[in-house]
Image 1 (cartoon, rainbow, N blue to C red):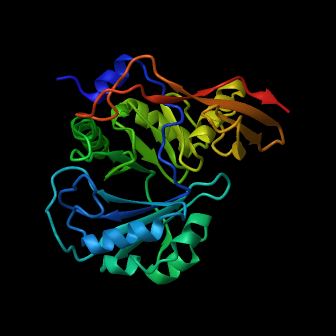
Image 2: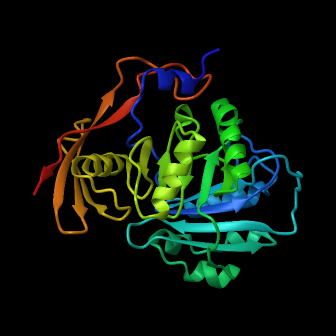
Length: 309
């Protein structure tokens, strides 16, 4: 039986503008099985998961569960669990890390401040400090959400973990099952799809050197989908590969709101600025958004030629 990832790959469906949107990521370690809605369908207390979802709404924070790859003991109440927070805005990126004994302590966090890039409350409440270690890579492996994430994501996560070249985690959901295997790199928030171990190595090493690899990039989670698409279009046009070279400063509706698209302004750190028209386009061939879903004409973000101010 064909999978959603196979169908998407055969059509070479564009990846730009498909990353999950989050100014800040809050990641909580949770061993054991994950359900379709992992925050409320895992061995994390569902009341805590539901409260985190509600508290994060409208703050720019996306909450997800993480776990180490491979076989592990299914500990319903571990003595401690790793918690990471990462802010993705250009020039203001950071990762904070801590271990918590009771995940209920997460519910009282000031997530609005985290979404703005202020980690003072997070640090004070949980005793967090700067993340130290190898670059963290988060591979989507939630097979209950979509089987492609299990069939393709878990082997990739296991391979990366075995090499020890990165700090590899499995993550519950970062969107885009049909682009599996998908992964997220923090703190910059760049998401990638259809990845291989060799491609991951290139991406991680490049980001460690301050450079973005545009191939197979889905976008930077800092921006909404039109902004992700516009930023990548400008990167490719002018060869601006520095991780913080570009920022999306404005996204305006281009037309009467009837699906005409957007006009996105992207600014380079050297002062140059481009207006990029971005429009939603329905694919010519219907494909499933996830395994088991009915095929539909997926909406793609299409960038027109960037216009220099």
